[in-house]
Image (cartoon, rainbow, N blue to C red; front, side, top):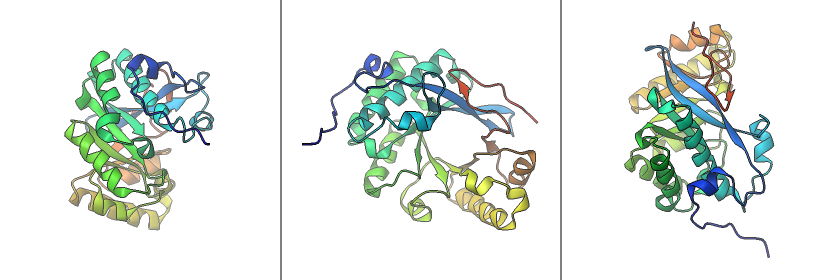
Length: 254
């Protein structure tokens, strides 16, 4: 018989130390900057190995049995380290979550709320991102997760828009506060008329839906300037700062 996932309640200390995962990991932080106010809008927590190995190395150890515990550990590790770095003083903390690991949103969020209280991190400064690259088999379940998180006072974001499984269908059912346009649409956009047309119309669409737009994966000044002309003012990418291991990056302001 295959081993069943363990959904027992986990404490903050257990999650922070990766109890029973069979592996441990930590976080790097990459800023999302606001070019209108010249400030850091948010710091995104990104999983890393203990020796700064990339996310792919970490996710090789995640499976159906430990997915729930891994998701819970990601949240607690991100909140604990962000609190130590005083992220909440000036910006939001953006945490990626795995929708398929959330079996009941009202139960799975308890550990996050406990961690926010324990580490004195205001819950209203937390953004939960879900990625389009994880195939969602139950869109109603995802909708209930987002709705519940928003009711709890968290902001929500769609990550990697334009590269995943659901695309425009998802917009008809889900209403996140922010949407991140994926780097596949950003790359070389200054030289690509098709990408310019697509992104310009996406920005107009998101504005009409009252969703804030973030351009991610920006690597060059030309990409940045082109996206700026479309009305985008929140950016993330190597052009501004690479992820910084267990610390906050120095930002290259234009």
